[in-house]
Length: 364
Ligand SMILES: Nc1ncnc2c1ncn2[C@@H]1O[C@H](COP(=O)(O)OP(=O)(O)O)[C@@H](O)[C@H]1O
Ligand SMILES: [Mg+2]
Image (tube, helix red, strand yellow):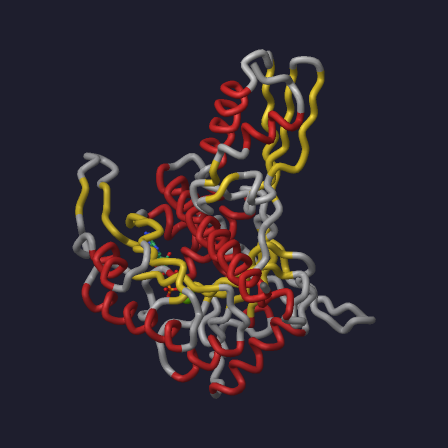
């Protein structure tokens, strides 16, 4: 029979693995505090993201392990907190010192729902407790102002001392868009260098403060402009949004290859407009075909982070400035998007943990 003390609690927790990071909680330094009060044990576990998809599994496994090690404990409380892990290069990069991770949301083709997905993912992460920002890098067709209900907000505020612009805020996330600086009726006709110059300013001249995740909604395509942008932004990684039909998949593959060429890791593929469930009959229709995203992920040795169906409420959410994760948080499709956001957060944590390990190995 093990005594009720911190050593034995640690011994128990060293048998619990983080299933994503594939190491135990003690080795990963995720056990932050252990409090013993009589036969009551309280342990604080610090996750690498508040949007951890395995939060409940890890919590349950901790209780089971402590119970097995110390049967005489009468009460076991596991408090879960989080501190988002930081992309290694980020800390060495002084452009945005408070930003821990930067993620590009990209697509080969336009109109596949990239901006819709980016906005909903950002808000889902924020709802889980992360600090999130979005840069609308679609300089030619900014959609963030409309999608986030900031369409008529003009006049950004500049700090008189630092000269930095304050990002706007909506639904718990910070946003910067060229749309806040121009009006709808004047299309932006910019050359590539100007576009990447504007994007650079969104990084250098905006007071982002501390962010766990900064998401870039990239312009569609894989041309020179996109390539320049991708090389301008210090990226933790990228996700590719595609629809299931062949024309979209071919372009998604090109997008994927573009990131590979410049050594930006790809966290996975999101299939949007995957299928349609008729609201009256519940019958499923594969309007654009099915399984394309999955097949592409396998072919490219990547992951399918999830599939989002066609839903008129998703479109309405974008048009009205109330994305579905805000307007209908309990709907099936808001849950699907939240799950995808958590899968993405997990992939970022895995990458950061692996980078840290290989960095240590290099130092040794
Ligand atoms: N899953 C979906 N179901 C229904 N409509 C969608 C879905 N995803 C996106 N849309 C709609 O499709 C259009 C294009 O989406 P958008 O996000 O602007 O694409 P992109 O940024 O790739 O050009 C928008 O009107 C949007 O509301
Ligand atoms: Mg867009």
